[in-house]
Picture 1 (tube, helix red, strand yellow):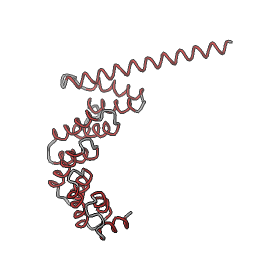
Picture 2: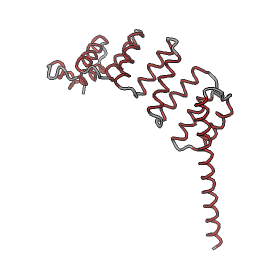
Picture 3: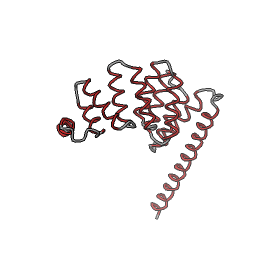
Picture 4: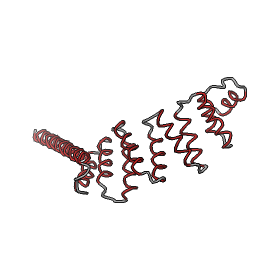
Length: 210
């Protein structure tokens, strides 16, 4: 692949082939050349979110944090639900003492992709970072949702129970309402599972008597 991309670039076969420039840049050890190709990719395709993200990662490694933040914001404009970009930008916001902006990024992504377990894990980790409390209600809620989405109902129920008892649910009310609704759904599901198991055991006992 590296040789193929070199041929494209050096022979100028497709000078505006944005993905070739982006991919070649990720393979180069020369950071100045890599940056040149990332910028060529963006010149050919100004909405190329991945190239913005990759160039931002390069700038962050170089310690140029302000530009890295700007590039990640540009990437997010063109790919609003990319979880890697959200996590990277939220981390930079936290370093810049912009905790509310970082949290808003995670919440916006959660609303857009509510069934992605990785996003719940990332948000739970973020909450633990800012709270540093093992019984943080919101972090436990996100972890319970993760278990629920991955069919680990019992673990989801245990964590949800801890979340309901963790903190005063005075604020925010919407968060508390979602948590208690989630807990109620888990209790119903657990009850149905127990009923189904009970019925199965009764049927097995009947068959053994026959």
